[in-house]
Image (cartoon, rainbow, N blue to C red; front, side, top):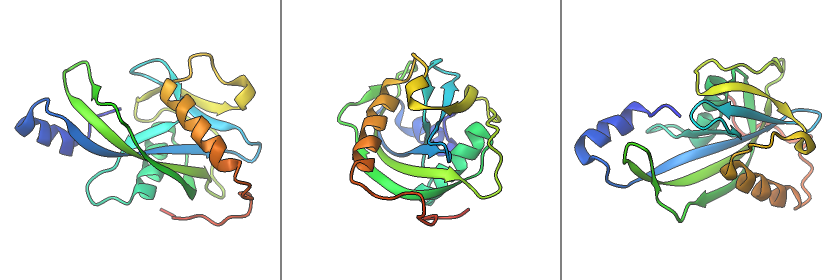
Length: 169
């Protein structure tokens, strides 16, 4: 993922010291129940849409923005699935350290939106819709973990088909 400017500004002051960051995961499904996945340019793995919340940005709006930036699709958030924090500190190749609190949202295509996913910001090599039984073999471990959490949430028995959007852009 491209590093937001506010993090670059912080890194100038604190170097590689650990940062506590807020992020989002967008689990986007279409009317056939397929999942939107992007093949990450940085790892080559397929993943849900992830992103970092900008200062003063609502987390659900971040999810909408990140899906648009990474796949070109317009979505609406339908539910907050979970808020989780990582117990592990990540160390990136450049030495930067970060730990994340993730806001996982369920989303669907906005009414009248195209199904044709693209890769407008270059963070993904390609994007597409996948039934769970045909997920690519190189699914990111973080997406596997989040998919399990999403499925547990779904198992609570909520009817998701008629719920209005939580937030609109």
